[in-house]
Length: 365
Image (cartoon, rainbow, N blue to C red):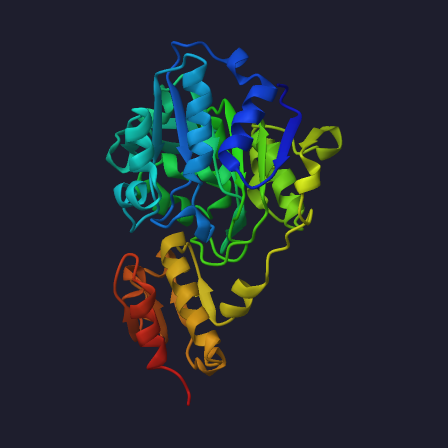
């Protein structure tokens, strides 16, 4: 399989779909049976895949079946959930504990892993060791929206391969630049995009859109550019795509891509536009270097207010992000970094219910 190829298969049986696709592209030709093969899903939160936030265990099962049937036995699954959530709980809730037991495949929580420094351009990146130690890394992101970067797919999914402290630092760096650099530090052998039912409004799920497709490729820049086009975005809209391309990670030239589709009769709509809901909800939010988990909790609290038509009644500015540490501000602070605001919600990250309670107390009625 060449780097300019994108393979898309449509259907509803994702275990069967991915097995057929791996046979079609003859993945085994890129492998040998002695390789240590790492599988990196997206288990950002402890929610089942049907909610649109996490990688379907059925896709991973199909991958494991293919590998084991072709003699590859040294396989592991690795992930680090976002700051504030437990990877081990995600393994259990998302069905990966059962999967690991069924196929005798170990699970590694990257929050427990040690890290090393990788110099990429002008940045030092702290990267978990285990993803660097495998011989072949299979990245299996979910195609879904993100409240800060608009979209998350192949490139951003690697953020689960860095320590929590580094995840926080990524946000102080503006998020897009270090995401674009990260794929230079962590080599990938194959990307399998779970496009079955991603949430096109929130990163942590709850509003899944049935897309019924799996997308395969080797170039994360090309795959993210293609995925962005499905959502109605250009590569310029998703800043880290151009940054990664500039670092030599891959090409965004879709005109030169060889896109092959399978079972097209099962194809749904070819474009799944994200909503402008997050922008609507966060009109009164002032964010600077906000972590995704904290920002996500805030968005969900604001959604609850909007559900009862009270969002318009918020009468004070809302501050969120690491850049507000130590600043005394008139308004509502979200999370530990904004505890000097006149009112603040404690936690790192705070939960949506606690945020909602404080917001409710600050409505003009």
